[in-house]
Length: 186
Image (cartoon, rainbow, N blue to C red; front, side, top):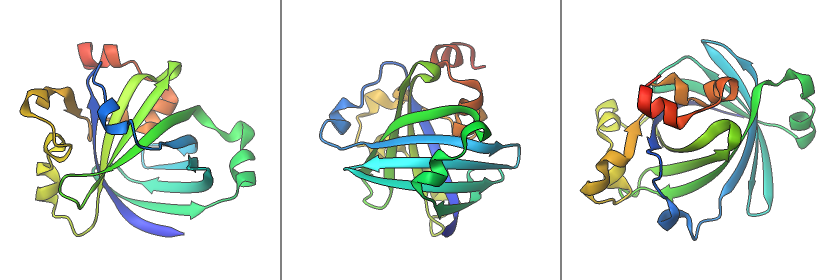
């Protein structure tokens, strides 16, 4: 079991942006996850991660809101993951995750590709920070610079760290329509 404070920022790639040049030689993590509890103050997620032929099963409990919140990860068995049945809250989420080392050589950038009908055409970029990072540095973290992108693509990403509609628990409950969100902001 591991307990830590999750400190994370999240961006989405605007429609049509291609990460192919980043992911063409990277083996993705295939993630299948569902929730057994979702409310305003907490969530419980069950996750299967398949990477390079190895499977890992994890139960995660998260508490609170915002850029920093307590998180507990507990290893579980395949049988525990498969046994929930009727206890699933919302939809099953499947995504491919690609991991890269940021240009600063300190942080890891995770690109999640949700290419499923229920989720629309969402590509999310997450960076987890550690307790040693200063909040001011976290707020200034420039995803474009860390991906080594030219200034011309600065508008390709939208910071959605504080937007609940881009949290996995919200997506599990309500789905996702990128076109509507980008046009209407709702």
